[in-house]
Length: 474
Image: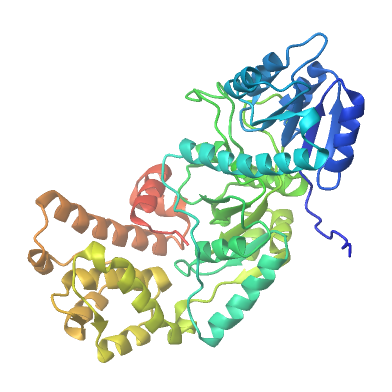
């Protein structure tokens, strides 16, 4: 029984370049079941379309009357190595296959030995592989690490968590852009990963871009990429976050922090699903089938009223908004979260804690947790470092809870493991730095540039310290 395809996402584009028009037409007929297809007989025209970023994959004949297919392949690779090119030939032979693969071909197909259905499957595999390659290229261009995309769980059995999972399920099933709203530390990035992994894009890349820690001067390059020579210091081409997330999901963390000019560029991407790398030809655009999940702790509606956030971008993002509940609304989940964090950090902290005393667990459940789940995690890390026995009790936990979120390591606990001087100094200073940054952000109502001014630091330095200490991440 046939079923109507209700997937409204733009279909991948396949370019077939072959002077055998009958063969190209037969292949195109099969390809059009899943892809948008164009056929050309002239490799010169193919170079123009390739340079514009139109195709997601190319089928290229190796033999033309006036062109060497291998030379054409090399020229295409010089333009953009991220688009897979599959070579076609009427003659099979090991030397020819080796030459094509050395020139950068994704695969090699002998026309007479492979029916159209095999060609279709080869293109499918090439498109899946190119998504992974774009992700790798993006990671290599980053200055900081992005955590992996392993299986993500939304922990908790409270009523608030149950409703939250229902909202996430709706978001995962609807292939539209999503806006995650929640206080700092509630786990918005984990929610975004859950949506991605449980959506039809789950096999595609998940790219998270922390807009809060990216300097304004580098933000456009981070999002859209740039060509070699686009600006001083652009010594190589860079794949941006949007392009790296093609066929997958892009999370834009702290969307409320981006400047108005970048908001306008982002709005165009959401409307057209096309980007242009910085320094690229004005007529050159790259199609990006990507789902955007934006997140913020700020009141975007108020920012719109104040002229700090574009109204059209806000309406575009809030089509599907999901509220991430704060920890104080899901206190029943705290014991499960505590056990999760103990398992996560017990080895790294070098302690032998096996359980939490009932009175200590009760204190954890009644604590206000202004920093939410991240606050709880940091508190447990600090407590584990102090704890000498197998039970984490109030004697250990009480002094830690007496301070703010993001505690420094108490000096009287250092002799428990007696770390080297420089490592101990780094841990103590890191805790103090985290507290300082949080205090500055609180005084500035979580506006990063204002907090940097209060601290008399350049915004880029302030954001870099936030990134290193984990302050401000969802």
